[in-house]
Image 1 (cartoon, one colour):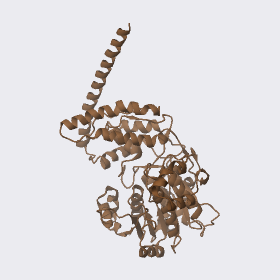
Image 2: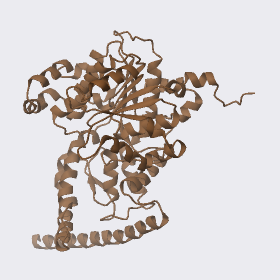
Image 3: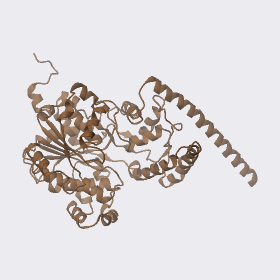
Length: 510
């Protein structure tokens, strides 16, 4: 008798795990944050035959050495304990999205064309202030080149283009469809211009071409979607749009993150006592998603894409899957900031420079003035102390970088978006109960408070390199207590001085 919750062999074969069995996957962006999580999940939960990973040669480091370093990363510990030889299924394809031919050799192109069943194109530059000519090459032109390569693949079953939920951020309510009408020029014309004009001229044209898009990242990702719309033809293709990707929720380990950018960078700065002033809309919402949810949704999207009728009717637009916070479970900006402070008492850092606190300057034009008093002046005295002790000053320089990044992020901190997620909701409904557990991306059920507790502990461990031991946490709490006393003592002194000055001025006026 079959157990009630058991998965039959026919269900297994028709499900996600069965689909990936003995498949060959070609993945770009393999060394990126999401790319590594996708690879780990594929190797841990499926019997995928091979993963070809396109990796850009890095000066001073062999490509194979970059993969070998993964064996030491916490992300792959669970996988390697269960499958010690799992990483042997990864084969490296030398390539570079900046190159006009993707930098892939002729022999490697032939190999990919003859073997690959699945393409996941995730390579991108995510820098908001990337020069236009660079962002165009990596985010837009490379998308066209990848589609051309995919059309040569004899056994292609599914192609997933990883975009971003903010590719159409000129709108504040974004449906799961294409919006070419918001581009100043279509992708074909912009790419043609980039081939005729110099890099300097293209960069000078940025304000004209970019139009209402807030930065070159979102603009070139919008252009990339236009490339997909125009040039995908009858490929079995879909688009995945995740919102801002942050630390893992549960898999393979809680709170894993390997980069310091975006929302986690803000929390890290607050946790260190460095960032004390930010600017955001108190009534707004934060659009963040755990990276393991993104990997799960991406792999499920590929599975569903493979089930569509092929060749796809070129007149029908490719499916779009958006992963963003559920409308029934939104994360308020205020709660996001409070989470960074709520858990400071539970596991504070041992390398704080001041007592962690953060104030909001909702009036954006006043932010630089307030930041001068909150950041620059204290930074000057901190650097002076470093100079007197024979060390190199660093805080004022750091604050200039922080203020530059705050300015870049202002558009996103002071606006909120609603992203339609109907396709992702339907996708979950098509999955078996067991595979909804294995490949979980249910944003409605996510407990934000518990999630951020794990994320902040992960930030402490993986970014701060501080062990999650009782001794380390107790050391952080002792430092926190001392800094708290210093902070409030200084605040008291400053208020007394301000009161004396104000009283003196009043007496002079009388």
